[in-house]
Length: 212
Ligand code: TYD
Image 1 (tube, rainbow, N blue to C red):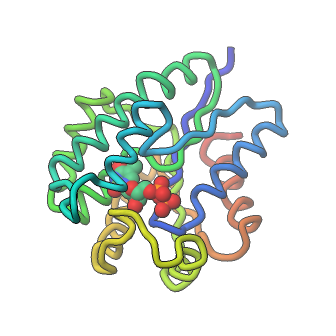
Image 2 (cartoon, rainbow, N blue to C red; image 1 turned 90 degrees about the vertical axis):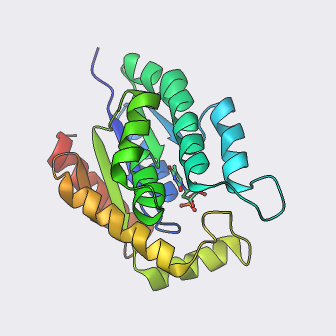
């Protein structure tokens, strides 16, 4: 049985991750490679329930504290890894995931107040530190992503997407630093141009890195 690979897409809101994840699954399918498309937070019934708690927190404007938030993301991920990601890989199929642990490192660790080491420790506890075979960071121009988000979300945004511009700048900087610190496991893809342009860059990165 050939080995299934685990690919995660990362990036800020509106970078085009979800579109690229879908296009990659279609491209793999066309080559006869079975790939399961999933997302975080979410991907299992339990993790989707935690997603709702995270993105639409109960209680008047109260929200979660940074530690509770990080634990909830790690708990959702633990369920997703145990019930869906590992079993899929064990069947020899691919997993294409829209966000994974590097989102927690960038949002809760880098831009939040927890720092990287605690998030990595939580991931060790929750998911035995599972890393994707390749993390693809889609980097998009902030003006372009703001335009896409206004089109997609209008005035509504979730509890995390609605945070300050400074927070999102810190997220973007953390994503870049993480990718640069892990040249074997990560690749930065330019998210400018059409979805097809970006997809071509993604496929090129996969060929170069994984020989696919
Ligand atoms: P989602 O709609 O999936 O992202 P996008 O807006 O990019 O399509 O929303 C998930 C939100 O949760 C997004 O704001 C990023 C945030 N997030 C974290 O803060 N930490 C995490 O570990 C993950 C997976 C997501």
